[in-house]
Length: 625
Image 1: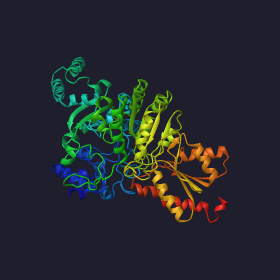
Image 2 (image 1 turned 30 degrees about the vertical axis):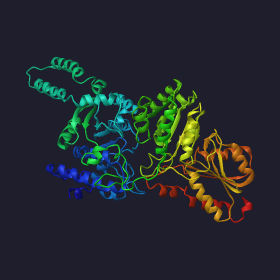
Image 3 (image 1 turned 90 degrees about the vertical axis):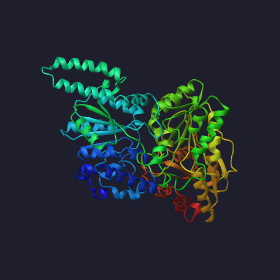
Image 4 (image 1 turned 135 degrees about the vertical axis):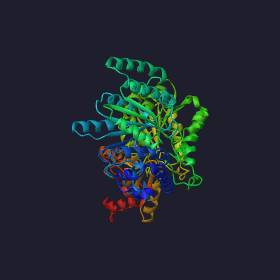
């Protein structure tokens, strides 16, 4: 196998040119085989194999630098930098990350995981290079989906002023996670069919070179004519009008052609954008046919492409989807907003049923939130469905455009808490913290699938901003008989006993049931309270618990700092209740990738670990609490 000869960066340069296609096929076969077992981002990586090979052939790593936007297309890059063996434990605890990690390799120059950051980071590396007098090449690889994010345009605007080389590769597969939407997608589609302009441009300059006496005046005339012609043949020529040299479109699966263009781009004294056309999922028919399904794939059967472990129970996203469709049928003022994730957030069914009330704004969370604020100001009832780790990108818009005006926007926060294999950039463990410091914001979390339904109905009847956060995975079906009406800032007492009171938030209620069961086996009296609201907290229930219990334990799947537990402890201190409080939360640290249950144990929010902490605190003499 050719792959066996790739032990470190730049080893690809020892491969004969006639073997490039064979190596590309070996990489694809390897990725399909490994990801079918571990899960991971398959479609984007299959589409970027030849592009990555071309970059490694044209550059010298780690001296030259590649920044991968989002980074879920960097698997081939990892293979070509000597990390082949790491794919046995891809996205597993202490194993190979599914994203670029500086701590993993000198060839990973910038940690990524969220969209639209690569051009800004690349521009910073360019300026650092120039100030230090270095001569290496900096390349930012960004997808057409990421180009729907506003941050990319802020960086492009800045990059247009460069007078030294900076290469931006636009990997255009007409997909982000779901199919791209909006004006940029339409613009790129036009460019894809306008290659005649590029051929003519090359012919004009070749002819000029061979013309005797072709001086500066002739060149200026040609440039003026070229600019007029660009407007006719390629509408807008957006990038060149900004001052960025545009090369392409280029066949993203032609390795030699891309190497040639990259080497040409290295000679440009300024920012240059190479427009590369690729096919997401290339080489694996199920991924070509269903690119959204294979964006972030669970383990699957290679022959059929079907999941190896099909879901048999509804997850929280499914419940949200069902309830949204039902509520949308009852109230025509309910509208839905998502940032390029109708499938991931469960809004695909709502889009199909009520297309005129569904808005996919592209990968633009800031715009999504302010757009929703405008919808609310216009008398509608918008829900913004978004992953927890992506919503943090729109903090200012939540604070300034929604909460300052107290507009009734509902935030449906999916993938809250520890999400597992995607690691630090995707763990949804900060939303309680970054949302609860904002005036006028209300925050709640359901204990099970029925409470998610009840909270959504409550939220659409509340004339204030509210966030409902729920985890990834199967929706909890326990505690079905406990379904007290949802009231703003009111907790739900599930079991009333004495001695120890467990106040659990959202996904931690299930864990608290197990904690209570273990403690009762040891002879402790344990109450269980479903906190429901992180803001405002139920101060009356905390006061009642302090009267009848010796120890208050808060449980949440959020970092300690600024979370629910700190709010309860602060109230207890202010009210002078005189009882002890144990806060169970995630340490104030980034949580790496791995199995969710393994990670929960590692950070100390598993049932057994919580029981150990409670028992050590209580000790043998319970009266000493």
